[in-house]
Length: 212
Image (cartoon, rainbow, N blue to C red; front, top):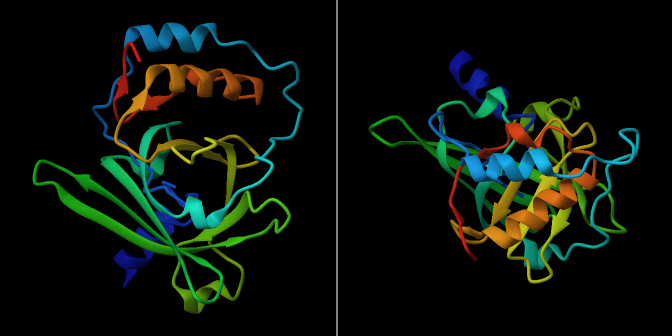
């Protein structure tokens, strides 16, 4: 029981993760190409670090749900040892969203899976949610909730970027395991404008297709 609670707690503050999610996780061996680091270092700095993080204007959750692949993330201690992370979202009858995050670990490719629920906290835009992975019987005391804000979203829902107000966590998601380089370049520039000043630490967990 203690082992189970520790495992649940490790996921409790992740956005839908991977996020929603995301399973948002990455391999310890993931590396960032030199050309991508150059691009990140050259990204424009925000005009003000005090500006609040902005979510997108509107999200159609009916289009947003489904399977997402994590392309990149900011480092976090909760995803150590994970690779090939995915997030699967589905609408529930009670209006909440079921979240299933998965990744593989180790040489034996053991699947690490966690399930949770997400709910909308901004019914005007549907872009701000919160997610919880602790058992339902303990949620009533208000523990385990983490912010899940959609801050960038493709018009055709081909990619999404998820973060939270402190900017400590960040996930770049795609409907496919790869993302065109031109698309990633645009995402990175918009993130810099949103106040993400440490993008050089971004970990790419999946392929960015060069020359596209």
